[in-house]
Length: 321
Image: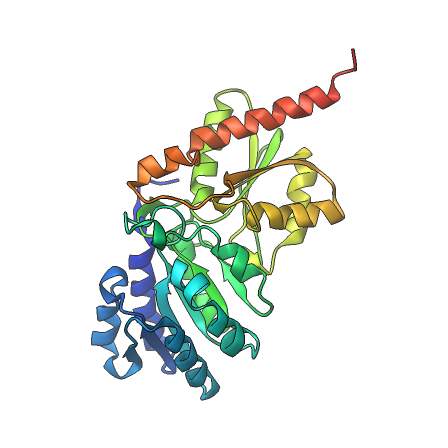
């Protein structure tokens, strides 16, 4: 992990400008969030390919679907909470079911939504989107991976949900990183237990692994940027490597990454595991650091979860008294 920090919403727009020059049929539809996601830059660069749809997100989905049937590659720009909740039925009926080539930029995901209020916090969106047939769900961990993922998404035919965060975060990948839809990547080798993470929570998982190393525990860390389709082969291999799996995510534990991993391992390789994330709750809104502490998602909390899993494994292995 380097000292460089990138905000995914800024990287997203810079990459949109790059892609606009490569793909003349790419268009952008915005749901009155141009300031939050810098869409003015795209409008200035490609005024004929930018559509300000206002606070009418459901209608925006229908317009994007219509443009896709005419051969355009539309991007929908909104907050994750609006796409996964307010627009859900329109996305399901007019985009996902007909398998149209619409790309969804889902900003301000998770609990670090810039104090926009608890109504704007999306912590169940992965659950909703990964359960939808035809929907590809991508959750990058840093700005470098986001840029690579966007280029891959433009070459991919089909509806895509791209989950992004608001605040600047460190990067763990270099410019030589190769992103492939549906492929997980090992970001740290270890032998004692496996930590599987997605999105920016992977950054905290890597830091937790460093903390654990100071305690004599070597954690194997697998980053899963694509939640649908899921890289079952990599998950099974990571579980086989250590025999213990801890999943961690800035998302509800119901139906998210942990549930997806449990589905794979439960059927293919039963493994002792723990699922770490937000419990069955709606998240509040507040400063980033306070939110991570309140919902126990810091590297320190991941390390605690890892130690508890290791203790549980030792208890199982000890002879009965």
